[in-house]
Length: 189
Image 1: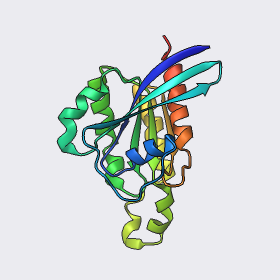
Image 2: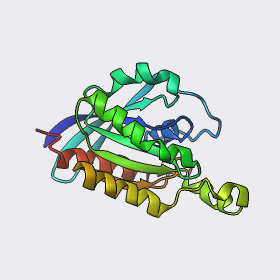
Image 3: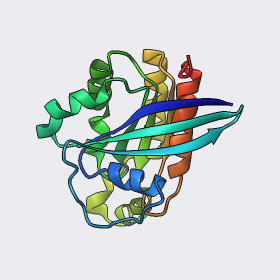
């Protein structure tokens, strides 16, 4: 049995659901009210992977607001993977993903594996029903294309998933997928 510790970062604009994803993954209750993360929040969870790998995921939930950018830079150091999170009902958060990924790779000092996460899929239907809000929706195809283009352009282990921190849909799968991408990139080396 091989045991490893993977440091991962949760990054993306404020209010895209990073903390809710972390809380859901840790088995904590969903909170509908928004509370700003100051700097970064931290959690650790163990998981078993195929092939006898026991992995502890050290999750750094980074504050998304611009005024925390200087503080955030230190939390990327030593990261082996990242969840790049956007809201499927907030197009600007999707458009900012390139900035987040560049910030991550610059501060981590290398191009680490990325799992692109389209969060808040539970809200997509109500936005679809409202013509004024429909234009802010990011489609599944757009998210998939972003991840595929990133992998092709940068040669980095990249995946895409859509999640709902509220319902728990694909939350476990997102962290599992990132652990697998880290392993594929030589994370136990």
